[in-house]
Image 1 (cartoon, helix red, strand yellow):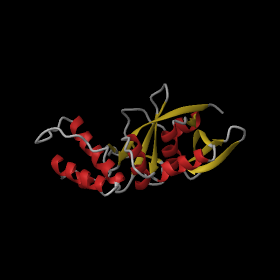
Image 2 (cartoon, one colour):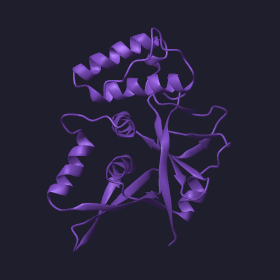
Image 3 (cartoon, helix red, strand yellow):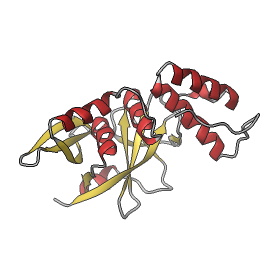
Image 4 (tube, one colour):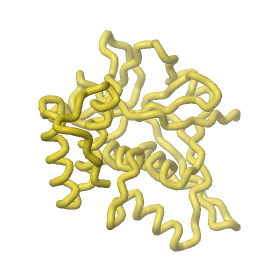
Length: 214
């Protein structure tokens, strides 16, 4: 069966359904995309890696990578497939250099591991055709990971909660500093992403630019 390589291009937050997040995967060498529903902790973990937050102690997925490495096992690739009920799942292809084993995984955990070690992510042409969409289309996803259609489009965002929307950029810097000092790195990454999102939109940073403490 033909395999299609995917790359993670970002996360989205659905303002219609509270707590719904999705990874957006795009076909390498193509334009077709797949939205995969994930939970809040996995979204935080992936965002920490995307923001390159370095923590003094490993997060859960970092711990998994370190454990595999300690036993001489590497993640060769991740295969995303779709179950009969429409939920996405994944397979981890692990190797110790001599033997390869395939392990069942949630798609969110699989991709959180893959982006940490640079392992390729694949799916099939059938899944890409069935569950994918083209840029400019108006996809929506429900909490079971099935594709649906609605008049509202999930908003691409770098933040995970609307609670940050009402805060000034000065307040965000202060909260990010407190989170970092308390070693709450997932929260610090969430706030950092919101700051960078606003700066990319041209929002001014009174009283002046400041470094992000990571």
